[in-house]
Image (cartoon, rainbow, N blue to C red):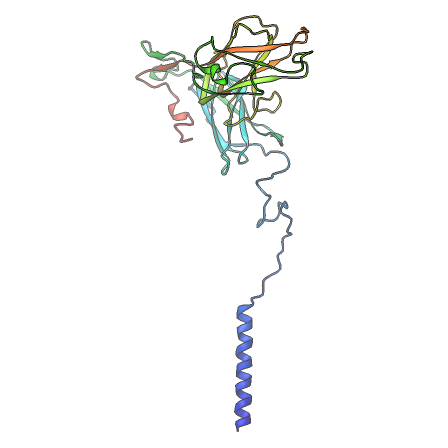
Length: 333
């Protein structure tokens, strides 16, 4: 009897132990997906977003009204997160750009339209290493408004004059200055100046291009850029570049983040103005790109007294111009 009870207890303990093992050591199914982190077919391990490869996907654009009577239209949609998005068309022949949201990829750009015309707009994404995407095309017809909604402001409206928005702005240079300090570029006094030079003593700027930049406090619609050259300036060739990017990096003629608005050769004026009243580009950065003049054989230097950047005059009326509800700010972007 005692032997039978002992055998029964032993079997019971063994059974309990086996049940415990089954509960604490579950059997996992085999992973049907490969472990390659770049395999796009693996939904549990998508391509690493911090190191994307391949061409940029063209932006998707939300539906836009095919006909508007406003001066501009808000183009919004979704692009690859962190990419830059730019629109060419309408009054923006050189392109208007913005940065897609780094997480959602959402973007919105107010694009000025040619009046009483059909405006074809190209929307592309771009990346410094992956290039430019295919274009998403949209067409918007701008037609004249009637009655109180006319695009032209009513008579008697007040206009805020254009102002120099570069006063006190932060400046940067590609190289150490030979004279002055960068604050002189935007201090409002053309008599204080900086001098920069490069290359070798025997060939001036033969193998060198230099630049200075001005960063505005915010994105501004520009009407004019004025460069006040110092009395000691002997540089002749230069380019004026603008960028609407939040951080476009150093000026570059080929990276797609800077747009050239003026190229000058043989300059001898003490003051040079770049008229932008027709294109009115949006910009937060302005650069003066200085180049060696191959027609000279002497050591070339550039002296700049002031860089002035003027915004577009604003019209203030009791009755808002149409389109307030069709802008990025009104849409909450």
